[in-house]
Image (cartoon, rainbow, N blue to C red; front, side, top):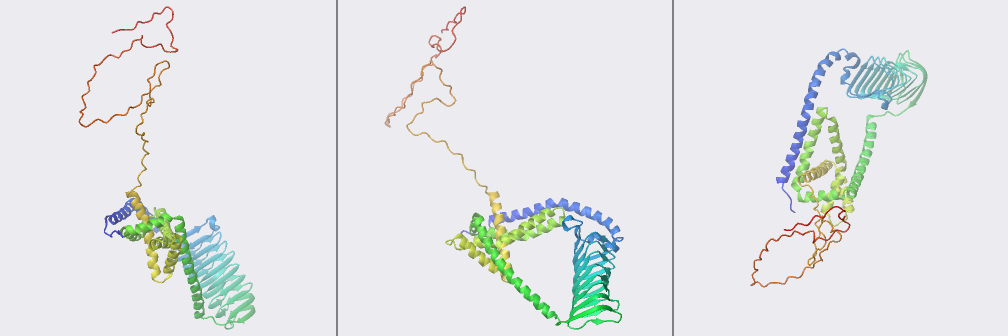
Length: 483
């Protein structure tokens, strides 16, 4: 088949090019890394002194990854996402949106609404001019005020004040003031001593709500409901997960087939070139793809760690993700064209894309097929660049001048020669006479060199030029010189 081993000279050149590229990137980014390290060390010294005084309000504000604060794109909302958020004694003009592992707000004033989702969510002694919407495992509202409050979680407690309250959880405890109606759906509902519900309490639970002494409720509407077990919730989620898994598999197969057909339609030469390259340069092709797949994440991590090279890191990441998305279809269209050369190219792309898509959806096997497709496309791209730099396309030669036919003699003026003056005799065109073949025995006699004779023409021999001015009266003609 004419394959090339992994230890061939071309593979060594590809390995050397990849290592040189990585080394060049490291050397180019090292000054930026040194500058960033020096600036961060000087900034850490100044921030450590101010973090202790701001810990009560922010728990180190610098540690909070603000996604958006006061940006018109988000409606001037405060948006936060991370691990732990602790905010105290702070005010926000618009909405506060937070998500993480734990969110805690204390003594905050929000001009809009509070929306938070975390494993543990607590809002205490705060005020929202609009609504409070919280979701998590343990959700608590203490001493806070809002127009409407909606709480969802495993354990929910409310001891604030609002106009309307909705709570859905396994266990709900209400010990606050509600001027309007309350809607509760839970397995266990308990109304505390300090509860003041001036509207109607709508309860949907397996048992009636427990009223502590001192609780004031305007009206109670109870609806008996079956107890929701964790098994029912898990079965519902498992059914949804199975449905989404099937949809993801179908979408993945259809997407791979579509990518294969598009690759064969738009990049026909590239798919054929990859098939030819994997057949003639097997070792270099596979080796380049494997080495590049291992080096690329390290280069991206290095560029991201430097900070100043984040645009380059994100650009490489985007290119790698794009290649990952289309690698399966490209490999299916290319490899099956090599395996079945007699079939039509679109038929090969259809069959190859379907097989690669189904194989990618299989457990364990799918990861291997996806990695192989990514290395296949990456190896082809890098090998094409390498071969293009090593063997550039030759320039097209200049067209040669057409030769005159044999037996023809050109009698016209030579290029660049001046045209003869009018009135001068012109030589008659001569025609080449055929040269008779001489016998081999006849020796060519040396040609005698004629003696040099002067070829100076006198003015008497030259006829007057037409249109030339004659001698004016009083002037004598200069006699011709004679030798």
